[in-house]
Image (cartoon, rainbow, N blue to C red):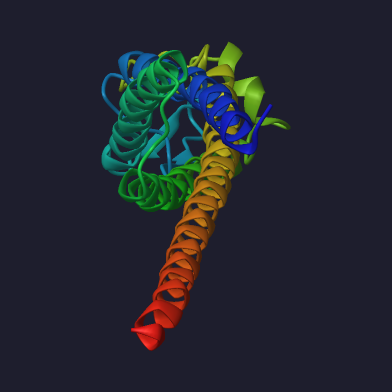
Length: 220
């Protein structure tokens, strides 16, 4: 198998994995927002009321959850388009152009940065929430079996599983996008090398042609 086919197959496999991981972010956060009545627990803090043991939450912006939903949805869409594109290339036996390979590099690097930002938001924001929860409970997941906020009518039964899944999906997606950036760079370097070889061969042919005509001109 040639280097080009190996790179394309690696890209297709990673894009399919990225597609599945995007769902690991979108689905849990979507259900979290439903369970928490539109509130996002990321970076949310609060205090415990001594009289009835209720958690008085100071809700952070919903934008933290919305950002992760947005970049994961974009990641899902790109993965779908790129998977179809590369599979079509394999079936037709064609290759990407230098320009499309360059576009893949830029896109992959951009998505790598977006994925890292999303993963950091989930990790740090969730840790802040758990730190507040653990002022009363020994572990963050202990709050899933308790009605800690009757005033906001939130359902906390699944938040630990939801954000555990979202955190896994976000960091693994980041790894996939970094891998896709490397595959795209390798392909771009390969095309650049091929172009240099073509230019060198053209110069050699031109030099040989001039050398062949020079004796003829001298004789005449």
